[in-house]
Amino acid sequence: MGLGAICTLSCLGLHTETALGATKIKFTYGPFGQSLTVQELKTFAETGKASSKLKFFMNAADQDPKVVRRFLTQDVKISLRLADRLLYLLPGEYALFQAGQIFQTPSQGANIQALRSGVIQSLSDDSQISLLEFLEKYPLAEMTIDGVKLARAADQIDRLVSRFAPSVESGAAIATELLESLVCDCESGAIRPKPSVTTPNPIPEPAPDSTPPD
Image (cartoon, rainbow, N blue to C red; front, side):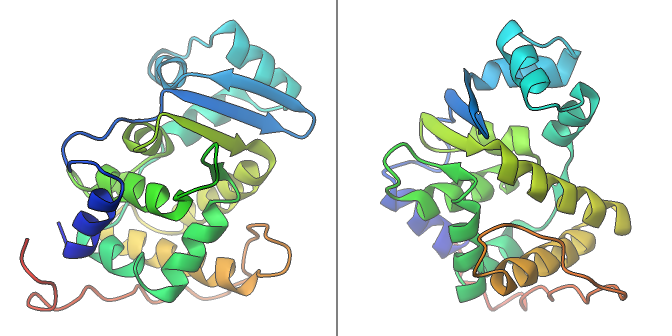
């Protein structure tokens, strides 16, 4: 784990192996809102059985349960070292700021640090991340998720994942395109697809000696 990742966890008062994980999530979708637990989402992802609250919310938001279930568990592969590097660069910081418009802490404090920690923790064991794993590794107990903005992001990520093979290299390409689209969409604050007719070059991994040892 890079020094940047360790500093993030330290600033949040966490040990790298004892992340709390979100336990209560408030989803909003326009005028609708519902509080759910990560365990409810995990049970739905693993078994397809939705709680009454989750069923109501998916119906109110007009979301296909099969699509929701797939998005919860869809993995994107990217190396921990590359993510640690990206998320401390200015474009990565801005991407985290934009992601904070979707995933919010109750107080809006330390939002970027919490998001970065959730990503790093999710990647730390197998270099891949899913929405469900991110929620399980998120370092704070409560979170609010804007469902409208999440749906936009989910649509873009789904298209990007479909374009690239499931590998660490494709994760770098997906991260590159997401960062570019986030940085270019400053005014609206919405995550929109960036038109592209060619496959973007992945951000190269840093040289073996460029990251200080743990």
